[in-house]
Amino acid sequence: MKTVPLSELAVVIRSKNAGPYELTLDVLFKSEEVYRFLKSIGFFTRELMAELYGLPIERIFHIIYFDPAAAVKCTLQRPVVSGSPGDTDIYGAQQHAPLLDLKVPAREA
Amino acid sequence: MNEDEFRVLSPTAILGYGFPEESFRKGMARKPHLVAVDAGSTDPGPYYLGAGKSFTSRKAVRRDLEIIVEAAVDASIPVIIGSAGGSGALPHVEWTRSILEEIAAKKRLRFTSAVLHADISSHDVLAAFESKRLRSLSHSAAITREDIRSSTRIVAQMGAEPVWKALDTGSQVILCGRCYDPVPFAAPAIREGFDPGLAYHMGKILECAAIAATPGSGRDCVMGTLRRDGFELESLNEQRRFTRVSTAAHTLYEKSDPYRLPGPGGTLDLTDTKFEELDGGRVRVSGSRYVPDLPYTIKLEGVRLSGYRTICVAGVRDPAFICRIDAILESVERQVIEDLGIAGRILFHVYGVNGVMGAMEPEKDSIPHEMAVIIEAIAADEEDADALCAHARSTLLHCGYPGRISTAGNLALLYSPSDIPCGAVYEFSIYHLMEVEDPVQYFPLELCEVGR
Image (tube, rainbow over the protein chains, first blue to last red):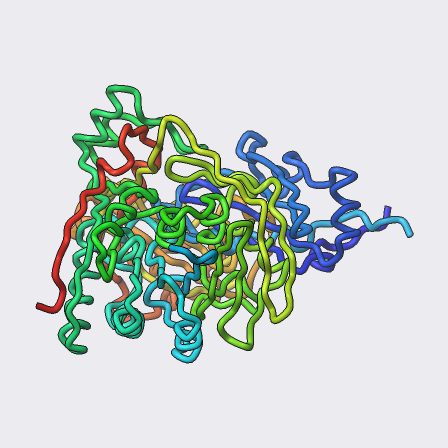
């Protein structure tokens, strides 16, 4: 199957704290068509995100599709609570990079 | 109020982040009913609540507040400041109040300020714990008595009800301790009979000001116009506009779930929300609903001291050292702990490898040509933290390793002094919901005359 890196399809790929205990990842798609296609095949799953971030699946809380913004959101448990000893990203703003090169199935023409 | 709209001017995303004066003047010319500004966040981490300090500078907050307060006094409209001083505990509220005093003295203003405190005693939280009125929030761990007793400072996020009480006093400035971010923007309109779902959703966007516009900015002004059946958002700077996507995208920002946004006493439900683009870079939002929760809950935020920190910043450029970094650091850590017998932690942050993502870093095998090593020591007091850091630094600087040919020293130390004491380290101890019978009970109101 032909694939493309997610960064080519998205207008926004970002991470941020959702409170000090959670990290939330947002992908906003350039095209509503691509968004609907990926939503229809259920491409984003907790399993996929667990693998991408090397986390046990119970730490991936949910995947939510948000039609008004053609966006998908994944919220996960921070490995270290924000600002506790050992935390490396207080705002959680630089945890999105593994998504950039994620290979996404290209829609059949 | 007879009017069918309620206009709220939001000058900036965080009080002290700044805004162009021209945007603000343009907003004031539209005769808003209210200027509201959020000053708080837990994003900067637990330190600021623990230490009683603001994450914004005094000068920047004074600059923003001076423009806001002078214009609002002139126009006879209230100013509401949410989560004063960043964390909204007593020292943060007092800090902001002293800035208001400075402004009043400089500008020869006199006004009444209603101050709402949000500190909550560990005694009250323990009582709630014993009567099973505390609940874990999403995925924070279950709370223990020890978490409560060890907390240095605890605040609760207030809802709209305490602000209504403050509005009843007719005060010029309402200075809130920690509060739910949308409350300063939404509470007055809800009191006037506007729909709470629309008012809170508008507040949710206005509290970040122009961050929800495009191009986004944390330091520019936005006007929100609330009507009976929806609200409109408008940038007050010609260089920005709201679009359907920028507004909808903001609804996702920093939220665990974009459809359900829980707050004090209720949940904002955005399942049926509609975003429509209007002319002139405006967006209309409708369909957002507020669903009251029973019993009423408020969110608690508490921190405790976890020790004192000292760090050292160093670079490494030697390939033989870089190849063996993991084994070298492990052996240094062991030696330092053995030598000194100090109870504490040594952490190495290796930039160039996994300094940003730690254990979540997927690229585990890449070998950089240079790296930064931040040595971090945390111990019970400053002296022990300094000792651990110094010993780790000198051990790492001169340790031998297989294949070493650079025998003069392993580190490019960035500074003299090489070690930097960072002071107290705090960690979140409480992030839980507390059931309350009365939404106003824990948020006492104090009236003060400013400038006389």
